[in-house]
Length: 195
Image 1 (cartoon, rainbow, N blue to C red):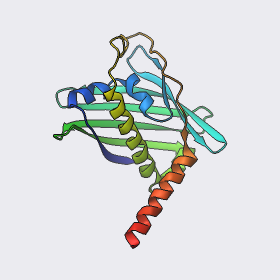
Image 2 (image 1 turned 60 degrees about the horizontal axis):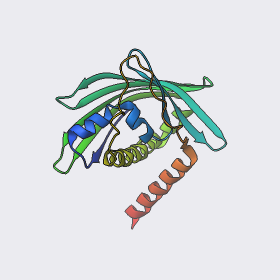
Image 3 (image 1 turned 180 degrees about the vertical axis):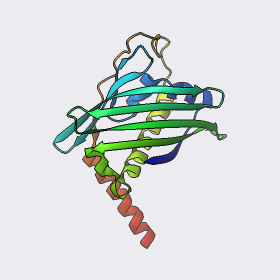
Image 4 (image 1 turned 90 degrees about the horizontal axis):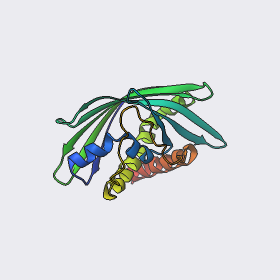
């Protein structure tokens, strides 16, 4: 499945670029995501947690920066993860292209992904697109707030081969709450068109 989305950040392009390629800095902006380790090859190990009612699904995964083109402001990342209980998984290639728009930076995100197991059921009826739009909107808001807060001098990516500092434990994505809010948004849009 392929998704193409965009979001805007009121900050200079180089500032947005440096933040987005700092995986440990931006990981807390994605609900449910937590970086647990930086591997010797430069990839990052982490978890993604989704709460669906009384059930919590935890996915163990790896994120790699495949290629970075600072001149063109294009970053390509690959991610893959599997359910801790062996009930499915996901893999994705994410290409982020940044461009200035006069008031800040626009980030165009193209994602090519495959999902199996329980999460695959959200692919029906365009739900994956709606969920990803909502998560991307929350991510953009968090990134904007993060850019407004100066990074301490000691912060940043650890040297290659050094262990990553674990991030704060992530709050799981509340799947039911997210689905309910998306359903409300869909109903508002539907009734808005009928008026």
